[in-house]
Length: 234
Image (cartoon, rainbow, N blue to C red; front, top):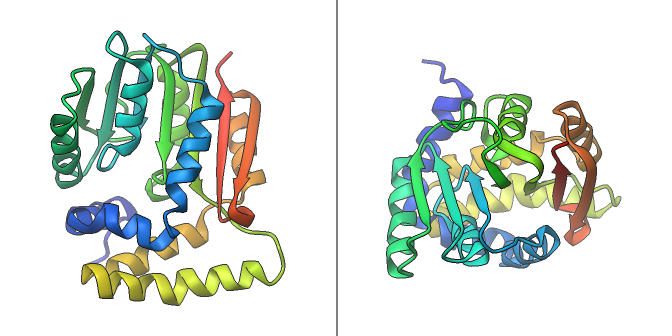
C-alpha cells in the first residue's frame, strides 16, 4: 500500500524518537549544535517575547528559545510525533522550565491565530513536510508584523568534489549509521532522500520571498551542507 509523504514521515519519527538526539550528533558530527547557536545569535532573541518552534521534535530549539526569552516570555513547540514530544516534555521538566508548552499539531495548519509570535523557527523539519510553501505561508501568518521567521535546514553544497562526497555520505554512510546506532536503516535511508531532494539555498530564499517575507538573510554552514534562512514579516 502506497504511503503519502506525511504518513511515511510520521512513521519514521514515531520509530526513531529514542535515538533521534544521538543520531543528530553522529550524522552531523555535532555541527548542528554550532549551526543552531550561530542562528540564535543572528536572531538576537529578546526577553519577554513570544516564540514558536515548528516541527520541534525533541524540543532542543524550543528550550533554547525559552531560555532566551526568559521567564516573562512564552514559547510553544509543535510537532506531529507524540513520541518525539514525550522526549521533549521530559527535557522541559528536567530543566524546570515553566515558559514552554509543547503541543501535538500539524505544521501545514498551525493552531494559532494570526500575528501571534515575535519569532517562528523550524529546524531540520521543513524538508519533511508535504508542501514547503504551505508551511512557510502558515509560519508567515502566525508571525507578528516585524517578526522574524527562521529556517535552519540541510542544503545543497555547490563546491565541486565536496558536493559529490556529501551525496555519497548521505546516500550510503548515513543509513549505515542508522542501522548501526539506531537499528533503523530504512528510516535513515528516507531521511537522506528528503535531504537530497530539498531545495538549494537560493531556491529556498525565493520561496521565502514568494511566501511574503522581506529582507531575507541566508547563511550557509560547513561548505553549504546546511543553511539558515531568516526573513521578516512586513
